[in-house]
Length: 558
Image (cartoon, rainbow, N blue to C red; front, top):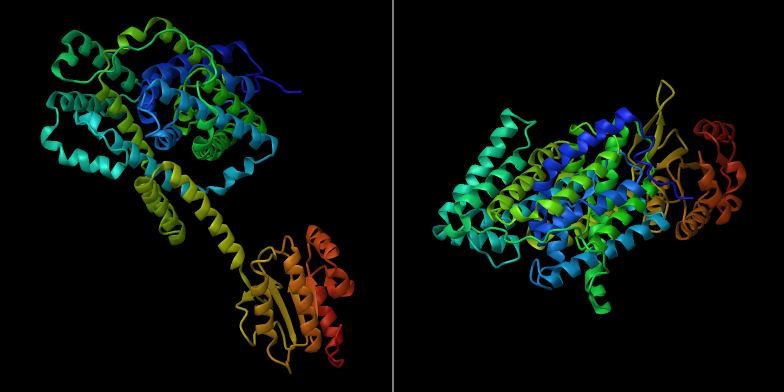
């Protein structure tokens, strides 16, 4: 039976008051930032408020994390914009319908991920790749709003072309727009520096909106948002056709991967920090429900946001009751305060988005990877460049492929070698080169990965190198199988052939430290029978003792 409100229960009076106050403060801070996310996504301003309404309530109902904020997020907003750009004019009715369809498809994919227990997919994007990916998103998003901040219109969709257009048009920038942008940025940054608890973004939005209404910014050539539809969202199915679904599947798939990865990483961090038991499967249901709520309320895909989660925690929240309160505040804004929003200058939203982009660009994180792992640094940097040049959707696909290839590379080139006993009873690993032995006549060979079709030939080649050409001085070769977690059909055939070849060369071939699950593979593929139970040892020292008893005897095949 599905248990609801796991992120809220149990509710205690003191905790409820604390979380309710935190939700009000969070709403004041987050509403301006979420309005900025609508610019990233290319959606109407009001849909940013919608993203802070029903999706928050849906995750609070079905999720398990007490801290994760599931709402509009810059990464998934950028994926959405990149994926449906060109299919319809930004912020148009058709565009909104396509964006809602992406949210609905994403909800379906997340539910499938829960049904098929695919949450592990999130583990295939390591932190290094995420740093590179989000840094690329930051550059792309930052470039996309430069025109808004300077009052320079741009028509291009690719970041590099947008940057070129802005640079080429700098002599024609709009001074008044630049002045408003500069004042807003300076105000927010100064408040962050000297009064971090003051909601600078909210003050800037209120101040700029008021000034725009009083001094008619629009009449002075400063672009403003314009009329915003008030009232609560009307629930409806996205107005789309069946043929709209196929081209949006890659977009929804990219959003799903990002949500799986980012939400799982964020919820795990805060669950560990606050010693909360986390139900990852339940969170997938919550994420699916939140995106379905987004789709039916006419907004865009939502994600577990690390930035907003950190903001909410800093407000003192300790349960999803704070998110429920935030949704209530947003509902009041939709009912009574949307009219003033029409005077908000678009350059102010551009400035807010630009600050979000700067937060995503983690150059220090990239630099910290370099001294510890050059290959991982190259992977992260490649992801960053690819996201900027090719797009967010393509970047996350590349990141997944490169991460998987790196895993395959490690499995294909495992750490292997010959085990040498040390004086203190431990074992030392030396390279598996010709002539390397554990002791005269005995080779204990360690293979450091699962044995499967791709690396089985490497396994056989290294053993052949250690044994050498007949006649050979090696009498016994024992494989240390502690790191071999499974053996597939192809690898089993290779082991059987290797057994025959070694027997023909007069070499006894066996295994040691075979794990119980690997032993099941041995039995299924008839390796136990072929090698002989007596030559499958529990410990390395048992193999050495057996060799010592036999080394005075003539060489025999087992």
